[in-house]
Image (cartoon, rainbow, N blue to C red; front, side):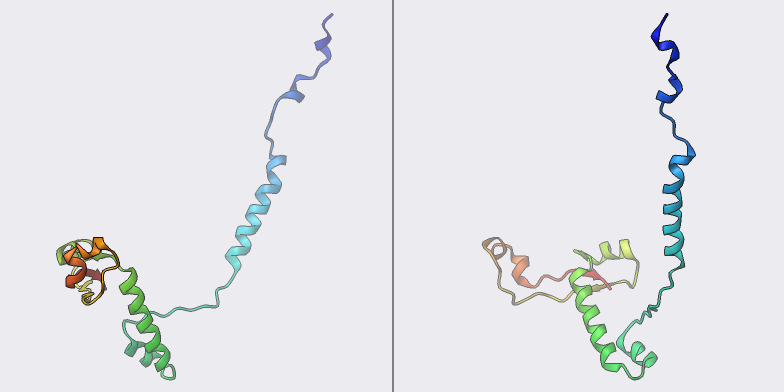
Amino acid sequence: MKRTKSIHHASFRKSWSARHLTPVALAVTAVFMLAGCEKSDETVSLYQNADDCSAANPGKSAECTTAYNNALKEAERTAPKYATREDCVAEFGEGQCQQAPAQAGMAPENQAQANNPAAVSGCRSWQVT
């Protein structure tokens, strides 16, 4: 007689029943439901320039001007730059590009820049507005 006759083989098989996944599914569902119910208190308004902001917020003219100037500096620093106007227009469309100010008068930081005439000549580039 074999000794394995009395072994219950089904108990050794891996099975994924719903009872193992139910707590995980409930936890994930609860998180998403609670996150969806959260109400955002912040409202955002977009303005084309400081004058539009000042017109919409009469008492905050100084804040509008400061925010607009900060946005211009950030855009100049982070906007994509293109060698030609055509390259910029091809990607962003007509009326979305402006010529970046020349960086004339800046001293080259290293010898490689000193040998590059574009680095010191004030060569202009195009950027997205």
